[in-house]
Image (cartoon, rainbow, N blue to C red; front, side):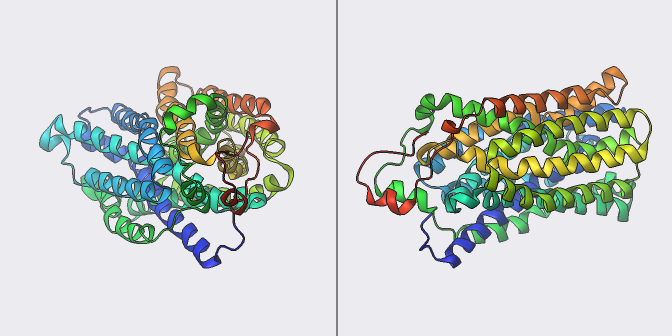
Length: 441
């Protein structure tokens, strides 16, 4: 990053990217916290478990649209610019979220209700598929090389605050109004709030400037015209992105989405207790992230993330075992432990995956690898965990799935080599060169 860049410009860039990210994750997360009411409104079964599974199935389905969204908006960001892709993603997400709040229930329009719900969720998936990779590249390209993890970790912190905002509104309304009024239609309010929130974030994002790295390659006419085709030469980096993001995604949705239903359905927590525990876990995750990022910037990505990933995997398995053995204090202590390792692990993954790919195809490569991991291991986590419990009648059974996600990321980190990381390539030096070279791997 050019040290002469105006600090005000840099702060504005971070504020614009992060504010939109907050709304994106509020929109995306509020569905998970209201899954019980959405399931009752859009599915016709008299069995609450069947309705919940249906709601989580739609939740998971939208994640399989995310790689497609990444392959649409990622190349747009690499060809035209990060700013354009960020604006498009925000408009798509806010529109789709409002649609969910407006769709009539199954009792009113029958089978059309779940069909429209699926379409809205797929639209959300397309948006989210382009959002993460673009924000990750944008922040990474504004960051100083030796503080890249610290700079990019704030996208994760803000994503969590977006989810917590959704959790606070959803659980707070449930606590204040009661479940009966929520079932009667009050659940729609958090979805409809996306409209005005999205307008505010859009105004901020429209004032964004392009990242200095992207501007530099554009001035040298080096921006990729076919980023998807160019990815054929970067199979290993994309697979490493996928592997690292497997645990990143699963632990994210374990703590901040699935755990809400798990505490309610399997451990008989009240809605008020669920609200405070999820809120506390989320705040704890956010608090430890900057410290984990600073440590990663200091000692290196692999040296930091590998032991943390192993510890996070062990903690997730132990938490489900404790839940099955009826020791609530031990379970809650392990939930806090999982939250801590969640924050430490996810603090540096964004920096790492952006360092695996050159500027000209960075957004496309990050979007593809990250969204594949999220589709397979992240968004499907609530559905798979709920399904495993329903089939085995054991609340320990989700531990097998989450252990698998941890193992995948640990293997990816073991295979990571120093030569896989892009070398620092200052903008001022790049702009001065009149060659077609790109950062080497």
